[in-house]
Each structure stands twice: as structure tokens, then as C-alpha cells.
Image 1 (cartoon, rainbow, N blue to C red):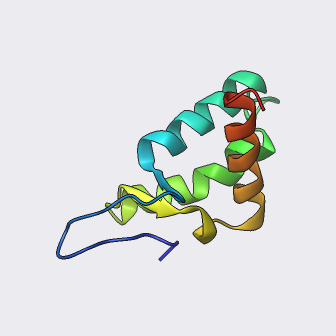
Image 2 (image 1 turned 120 degrees about the vertical axis):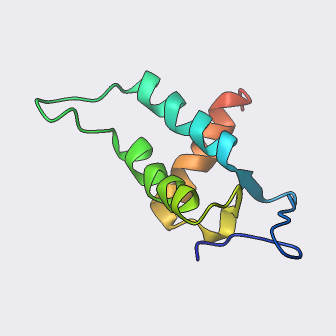
Length: 89
């Protein structure tokens, strides 16, 4: 599992360091808009690519929340940079 949190059967809770699947999708779309896919293969930029793995895992595992701490370092960096840029910091 990738740092997902659940409370009770099927109930997912969100705490301060948690990222919802909708927030993760927004971050991927942010990076895709900022740095569109390139080449004949339409390769994602490194940030969108890093965030796409936990996003796919969430879908497969039917999870709606993951912890920031559960992200791999490159995905965590992409997430944190997205949050800073989104918030104008």
C-alpha cells in the first residue's frame, strides 16, 4: 500500500498531510498544463509522471486518500512544488 489511510471498513478519513485522489488529479493536470506531453510518444513531464503512479495505485486499490509521507521522493517533491505554486508561495 502507498500510505493510504482508512478507518473502519471502507471509511476513509482525511488528516492534514493526506492527499485526496481529486487533489492528486488536479496536481497532475497542473503539471500537464505547465509542461505539456512531448515527443512522438507524448511523454509526460517528470512531475506528472511521478504523480501518475500513486494516482493509478489509488484507482486500482479503490482508495480516495493517501498520505504525503507515503509518496516516493520524486512524487513528494512534485506534490510539494505544486502546492507552493498553487498557493503562490
